[in-house]
Image 1 (cartoon, rainbow, N blue to C red):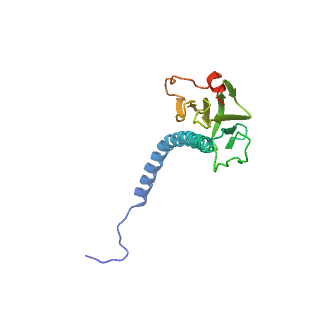
Image 2: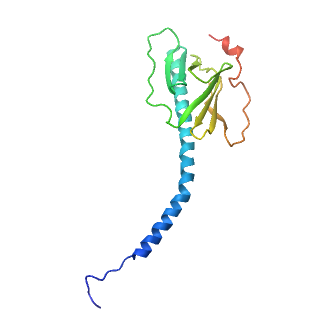
Image 3: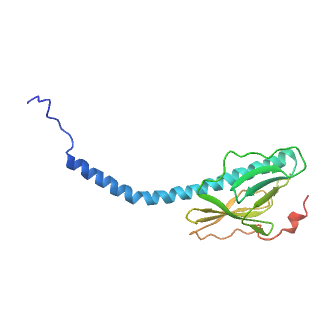
Length: 184
């Protein structure tokens, strides 16, 4: 055997170029699918943000025995929580809002659809929530409808574009609820 320091084994230039071509074709096929997953993830993230904010407002109302509200500004796409009673509580600042490519398209509360301005969802000290529907949209105009029942149940996804789901029974916020209006 010869111990030549200049002779070494490795990949040839042709082999490296073939590997790079295979990798680039694979990435070109995978990236569009990955982008769709990331956009759906943004809708999920926004849904989770709203669910956490609703829990915060409901907890504040029950712990402080006051009416609280979650105010959504559809023009600026911001959310804050504050007491609706005449109290000294300042609005609760939230650390973040919606991802840049997801926005609140509309909110239906007490029979009124809001597409601009402010919408307030009320929370009572006894744990009841004003029923509503919130429609989120992303940059591809995929929609997700979220339903908040009056019973104090969780925020649930009712409908997402491309999916066939049945609406759950019960009051959905699309009409004024006389039982809600009779509460304090």
